[in-house]
Image 1 (cartoon, rainbow, N blue to C red):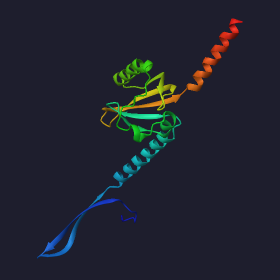
Image 2: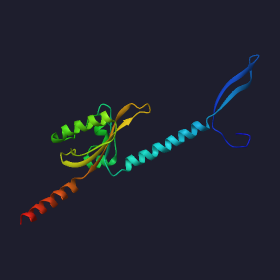
Image 3: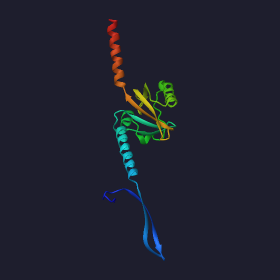
Image 4: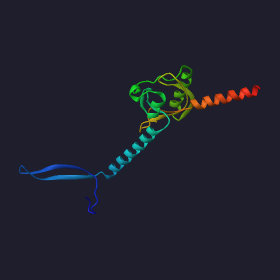
Length: 178
């Protein structure tokens, strides 16, 4: 407690004071850690906000380490693609259809080369083999020292929109042919 009666977070270091073989007191050093505690609380609150955004996103999200293995997914990823995190964590996720592999490889190379967000319309497979049309947005994930530790990909399932667009184009061609 300070002189003004406010409480302060401290770290305490103490050693016994021994005189003629008997402990007569304790030598204590108090170190004010209020700023450190505030920084820790701000970090915890920031982590909670980011976790909430990640988990509550309606779009599927997957985070990969620098070797391409899955480290995290959100609930929407499981709902859209069918894999649980426990099934794929620490593994490479093979859900790129053959016709999209070259495009995906180029996208990953560009992501790591440029270090900025890349986006594309492509296709991905679900656990049960269905093909989804997706828009992806990918960004590198960096450590505090600036080194790249992996990447994060956000998917938007646009399968219904693509089917609707194809249907409209088909009907348009039909009526143009009349």
